Length: 399
Image (cartoon, rainbow, N blue to C red; front, side, top):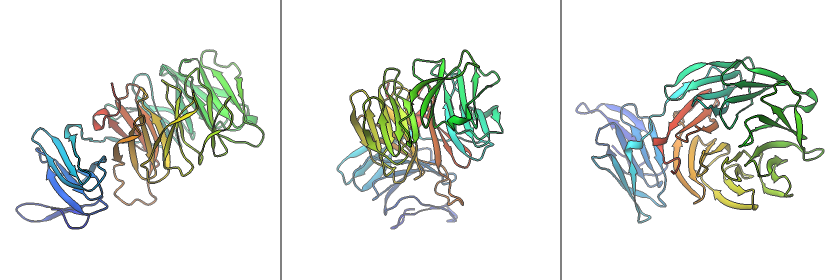
């Protein structure tokens, strides 16, 4: 049953016993309907959204954005297509067969810092206590790659065969699942601020330090690193760095600025921006000074290609899809947003499961990564939870 407020009340029939109250809409409800199997409830409201709920336990399944006005009516056909009508004079169609049943795994470490997919399709998760490995298809734990270290940086070579991880004072390299090999880092360099793999080079991993960029060989393990780039200058701090393509410039973020080496001058002011690069083009994406909007920038001609507006709070991580047509971002507003950056459109907003429950301390997204085939998105949270969102949850990548 809907109410004149924002809550949905569920009752058992014929007893009339109250089962649960569903909350999430921010303006009055306008329409409710059940799916043909009775396992999904759809609600439409004046906040411009359609929300999907699990009938069995009341879990929120998805928030469908796209209307530019109040949503007044929602219906579901026997073949599981959902239609919504809005004050914006449009009727939108959604396919309920793509509804997510978001599996979750819990890492042993207390916080997910970075996520990366390997060549065999498995997922590596860096936590404050080590690196764990998972099978995203079965959610089975595959063991611990490294433990006893707080891992802040991990990266995977373009061919997916080499996993690199930074721990205080050292770089660890694991190839083809063999035992990791330790490479000591000169303590005078300090801690690296970003790890970089060139899209066409599987043999070298680069670490960006405050005043320089160094390359380690993955084939001649034990060779000293080679300095391949100078830092931005005395007193500056390199916050983020990444390579857009093998032929493009080094992109780094210095003192609240995103800068492309060789071009001079800032691209856009930002607040310790989260930077992601497309491996198929010279595009980068980063959040702006307020930390909520995303900017897509072309390093090849120095133009801003798109500005993506939607997150209500600070962006925590951002990643391009393997094909480069989609962008995924997670933020402190507890949403995973999938974007068609070329059109500047938000394709879908998916809320972190459990975000409707007040947690103390609050739990937020911290990491996001795409699988190598573009069919899975993994998100990590600061309570050690990893959620897996499969390609049927949203149109994540165009063919």
